[in-house]
Length: 337
Image 1 (cartoon, rainbow, N blue to C red):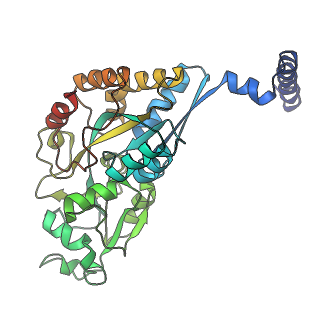
Image 2: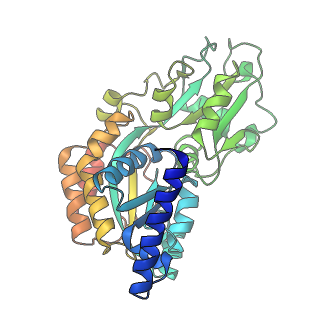
């Protein structure tokens, strides 16, 4: 089809649509909104690859009748929008916290909490780094605690025997659930961190920064490391490397963590949202493995679907972080009614 024919055909379709609208007394926007439903998702960059995969396959299965938009504002940023009623689903790399619970309640937003996968939060360095093969949690705290700002700026200060080389740090921004989790697990208090590091809610920006600086160190979800394993090198923590096996056997602590989606009570009864959540949970194990996260046991997704169907609103975490929670512990906690 040449460009002119394409334009004419487009105008023909537009004309027919206009005629239908005029016949039934509808505006153009009303006709278009009836033909395509939109589901808005925002939040964690860590969870983004799983939800993006689910959204792409779901949209194909729906033949274009449903549009799923997936934003990346970080877990905290996503919950701000979610609790204002602006999104149907929120991606989260940590449980909803008490302040966010209060914000949602104030706006009449209830939610169903659905665990979808496990992540091995991964500490990474540049491939040219030959010395930091493993770091202890104590050494990571020494690097990242607030008191390190302006003081711990050289690798030689981290451990005796490390080279005299500038320490360049990269990490998630303060709206990130990964930032919250890491600081809680390593420093001992959520959001307690030095501020003199390159921060971004977009993990791809962190990947690029670390891959270009041989003295760099940073952290983010395992999927972003796995996708860029030729450009980055994972650091063992307390002698244990991040992997599916070490997450499943519980040895990669305290940096293994559950990942979630939260579904808003304001959207839960919409047919397209019901269909998408069902599709997501039915395929979550496949999508998680595809992007290199750790899938939950099949019974976990059955339980999640049951909670969604029954509209089991609220969080089993009571507004608190869940550091070092193993998969079997999550399942026992989530199974409680």
